[in-house]
Image (cartoon, rainbow, N blue to C red; front, side):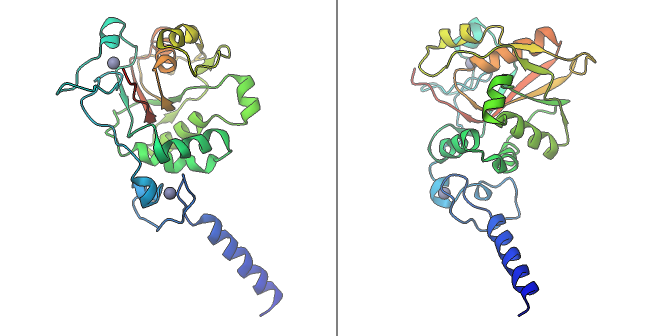
Amino acid sequence: MEWKNIIESIVTGGLHFLFVPRCLACNALLAPTADATAVSNCFCSLCSNSLIPVADPRCSQCGELFHSGLQNHRCCACLTDPPDFVSLHAPFEYGGALADALRKFKYSNATYMAPRLAALLRMLSLPTADAVVPIPLHARRLRTRGYNQSALLAQSLAAQIQCAYLPLSLRRQHTVDVQVGKKKAERIQNMKNAFAIVDPKHRLSGRTVLLVDDVVTTTATVRAAAAALRHQANVSQIHVVCIGRTVSNT
Ligand SMILES: [Zn+2]
Ligand SMILES: [Zn+2]
């Protein structure tokens, strides 16, 4: 075999190795599948077993899981202090292999995950929208991390559903204190005025928007972002879309 062919086979083999799909959580090799939205395109069978699809009954607005009751209805928080988003859509509860994958996606430069994670969102019956907007990072945090995982997710989703992607219309005003360990009311206060609108051409006015985040925990962040979109940019309808929704124990 000539050197040229040897080098070519090494390069081809390396590329094949690199592009064989692997489990986003444990890195196991995956069998190729023609269905981009299939869970098996992201996770091996072992990791798939740890995924918990969102189930009913839950709040029809914020997606909070009810531990009792029969039907979906609005939770107490949404009735007393309605968020500015209409609905929240997530394919899975946050936990297990999904949490492992999302941690890698967020903190370990695993940006290659974005298209496959976005494809999981297409398992959902997403409302028809005019634009996809990600939850932004503050510029300082963006510089430190190098990328915004929610923006990558939103960009991939927008491309896959052929919808406008408007990442710069929502801006993080200031860095917020770390949210972990804070009570729900503290998180909401912490997020107040965290977002501002940059939409000089009024492209969002009167539109329906999918607001994308990777994980939604207390809804404090998406509530604050939706409030800015609704009241500062005159967005008509906002639907929150995320990969993982945490379950509270209350
Ligand atoms: Zn796995
Ligand atoms: Zn609710």
